[in-house]
Image 1 (spheres, rainbow, N blue to C red):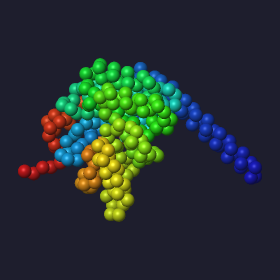
Image 2 (image 1 turned 45 degrees about the vertical axis):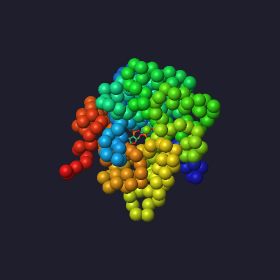
Image 3 (image 1 turned 180 degrees about the horizontal axis):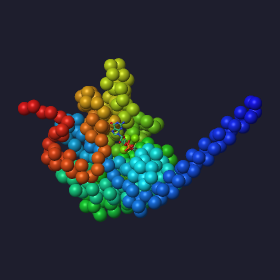
Image 4 (image 1 turned 120 degrees about the vertical axis):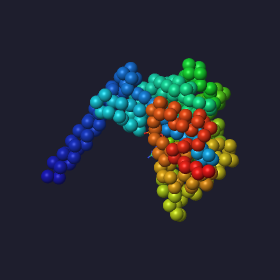
Length: 289
Ligand code: C2E
Ligand code: MG
Ligand code: MG
Ligand code: MG
């Protein structure tokens, strides 16, 4: 009986694997159609200054409306796009779309775009960025490229050269999800980041008395300040976390507390509600004279 059970378990796993591979293959096929079929759009999430609670910019987040499955999260399809070689085409679409839409925003409002390590490894990236900027008319200092520690995995002379080339274009560079990977301090020494984004796993629970996350955030902020880099706390959800994050010295907050990712027209509404880039975020902060 034990032997029969063993075979049953084996067959079960094999079928699971095949089913997984088939689902993935189907996702890959669908992903190939998605750009041409206009199934992608970008949502934008506000990044807010802790100093005066003004929106200083937005992060562009890719959304896919699958024709039969409905919305699929980038956490699920971006890794597939990376593996099947589609991320470069999709990533170029993201860059062009984000620059074009952000060019309509008032003043110096920034847009942050996630760049996959696979795009970063391609020597053509600076040309793609230059072309997206030129086509949109967006000035380079308003574009921030978010890069994860994944770019350092196959570290080479290319990596350092790419950072230098991108900085020469005048765009900003942010280290995304800091604290979740190897977080080698050597990365901070080598790469000219303008900002560190502190991963939401450190924000979670930081408010609780005696929680160690607050100390970790403080240490990251101190390091960033010393290196002349800004900091964004990611994933701030609760009103009472705002004061803590501000007191820990973070320059910016991004999280559901200030707004979920929203479509481009909603961004224009939010920005005009705060009077271009110069007034406070009215709907969240009550200011009594
Ligand atoms: P990320 O770059 O770290 O983006 C932040 C993620 O946190 C977003 O998830 C956002 O919706 C979510 N988030 C923001 N505030 C909160 C909060 O208060 N609470 C919680 N629980 N979550 C919050 P999203 O949009 O599902 O994106 C997931 C990841 O997918 C991104 O993480 C990024 O790594 C990747 N991604 C998204 N768009 C693109 C893209 O255009 N290109 C590439 N290469 N990757 C992308
Ligand atoms: Mg990001
Ligand atoms: Mg992040
Ligand atoms: Mg993330």
